[in-house]
Image (tube, each protein chain N blue to C red):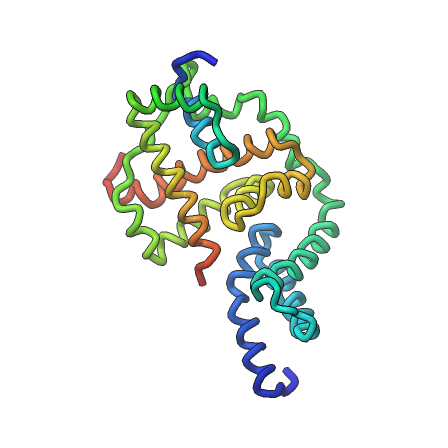
Length: 61
Length: 199
């Protein structure tokens, strides 16, 4: 895997983090991307929110 | 409804209190309110009949859900013949990544940048947010919505979901990723966009 990833790949890795443990290479390239991309940082926060909202959706009502 | 002894009455209302959750569960899988309510009704009746055998090893909700599951699968089998497996053809080919072209440009950048959502915590407190959430979930194609619901809402293992749905793990991951992208875009438009003004 190359050192730098684009948004498409970074978003895939961010999503994958909810399915399995990320590899060191994935984590590294993800981190270096996030450091310089506010859009993917927003996406990261939104995934966390989706995850939390889904959990609350279950216990609601 | 036959008359119940006091203890059974409280059992009844306890079981009944899970109805909204169960309807949501059934709805996510069946996508038809009438069918969903029918399945829940059958499940609750079956539960009342056999509540004596409920050992309390799992939570009441888990137990009820497992009964409902069978009713849902039964209904799905009946309508499966009509639907065949068309809904997964799209998911199977989605591994070629073409679907991503709507979201990312040729260089892999977002076509529409995800925004910073203001006060997401506050949204969870609002009834209308949940309506928007449910609408967005409902806009996903059925198979994708079901997989997302099982994974994120019910917290099932990916492995169990794959087995149930008859798909591979990597297919499952693509479906989940695609669902998340669609849901975040939908919520940004229908809920969070509204608060931060027109885009």
